[in-house]
Picture 1 (tube, rainbow, N blue to C red):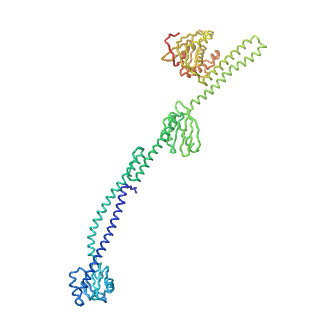
Picture 2 (cartoon, helix red, strand yellow):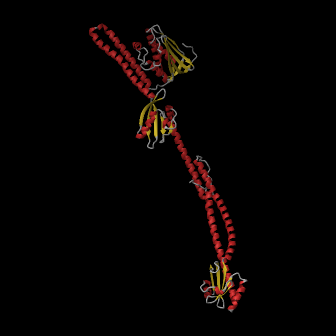
Picture 3 (cartoon, rainbow, N blue to C red):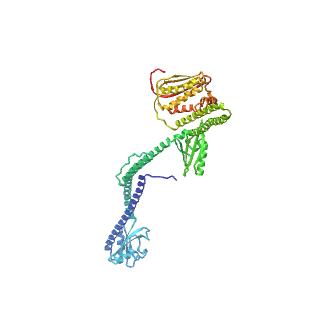
Length: 574
C-alpha cells in the first residue's frame, strides 16, 4: 500500500476536528439528557401539584368519585386513577375500575400510602408506553394517582434536541475553523524551517532561517542555523583538503588511479591519463589488460602486486604497483621507467665499452713490454720501435682516461656560469691544435665575431677542442677545416666544417653516442677515443644549446653549435 503522508496542518485539523466533534457530541448528549431529566422532573412536579389539588377536591362518597374523575379528566391531560387502601381501583379516567387489577403493589402507590407522595417511571402494562406516575394520599384515605406518557416530554425534548443540534453543529464548525487556523499558524513556521532545511541539504548553506514567536520553534531554527554554519565550515575544510590532495596527486609524476569496490574508477590524476590515456567508467576500460589481471590478483590475495608492462607507440616501459584495501578498493600507481631503463642500459653499455676500450691499450702495452723484454737480448736494434708502441698505447690510454674523467665530471657536477668571451675561447682552442693540424697536412681557417655567452669557460673550451680535434682526425692531408663563429637571431652559432670522407646517413643519428666510431680503424689509428662528440653534446645541452651535424659522403661534415648570446657587437668578423 502507498505511504500516505499528510501535512502537519492536515494532521492537526483532523485530530482536533475529531476531538472537537467528539466533545461537542458528548456535550450535546449530556445536555439533552439533562434537559430531558429536567423536563421529566418538571412534569412530575406539575403532576404532584395537580394530584394534590384533585385530592383536596375529591368527594367523600365513593359513588361520586367516579363521576368527579370523569368530569375532571376533560380538563386534565393526565390519566387520573383513585385507589383505595386495599389497592383496588375506585375510579379511572380511561378505564372501568371493575376490570382493573389491584394496584397495591405499584411502587408509587405504596410510597404514597407510606409517605404521602410517591413517583415512578416505567412502561405501562395497559398502554405499553413509558409513563410517569405520581401518587398523592388524599384526606379520605385513598390515593390519587396521575400518569402522563413520556412521549409528550420526548416531543418537547425533540424540539430542544433540534435546536441543540443546530447549536452543536455551529459550535463544531466554528471549532474546526479555529483549529484549521491554529494548525496553519503552527505549521507555517515548521514549513519554513523544513524549506530551509531542504535548501541546506541541497547545498545552499546561506539560506536564511526564519525566526518564530514560539520559543521551541525558534530554538530549533537557531540550532539549524548553527548546524548550517558548522556544516559549511566542515565542507570548506573537507573541500580544501580535497583540493590539496588533488593538487598533490596532480603534481606527482607517477600516475595514480583509485578504483572503488564496485570496479568503477573513482579518481585518475593527469599523469595517469598521460600514461594510459583517458580512463573513465570501469576497470574493463583499462589498458594494458595485464593491469586488469593484476587488479583481480591483488584483490584475491590481499597483497600488493608489482609488474612491468609496455604500452603506447613508441612503446614505453611502465612499472605498475597495485595495492588492495580491506574495503574492496584498489590503488594503482603507474611509473614511467622508460628513461630509467634506458639510462641503466646506457650505463651498462658504457661500462662494457669503457672496459673494452681500456683493455685494448692495456693489452697493447703489456704485449709491447713483453716483446721489449725479449728484444733486449735478441734484437736490441728494435727497442726504439717497441718503446714507441708502448708510448703510443700509453698516450691512447691517457686520452681515454682523460675523456672518461671529463665526461664523469660533466655528468656529476653543476659548474658555475658566468659571461664568457666565446670568440677568445674559439681562437685559443684553434691555436692549440694548429700545430697538430699542420703535421697532418690539414689547413685551418678561422672566422669569428666578438660574441659572449653565459656558461662555463673550461667546459666550452673542452667542447670546441673536441669538435675541432674530431674534424682534423677525419680530414685527409691536403684538406681544410673551417671554423666559423657568427651571430644569428640573437644566438651564437659555431660551425666546424671539414673536407673529410663524410658520414653515412645511417650513422648520423649515432655519432654523438659514447664510444661510437664511424671509421673504427681510422679512429684507433689517429688516437680517437670515441667520447669526443659525446662530451661536445653534453656540454652544449648543459648550456641550453643545441648541436647538429650535416654530412655528405666524399664531401665532408659540418657540426653546428647554437648558444644564446649575451654580447654581440657590430665589429666585422676576423
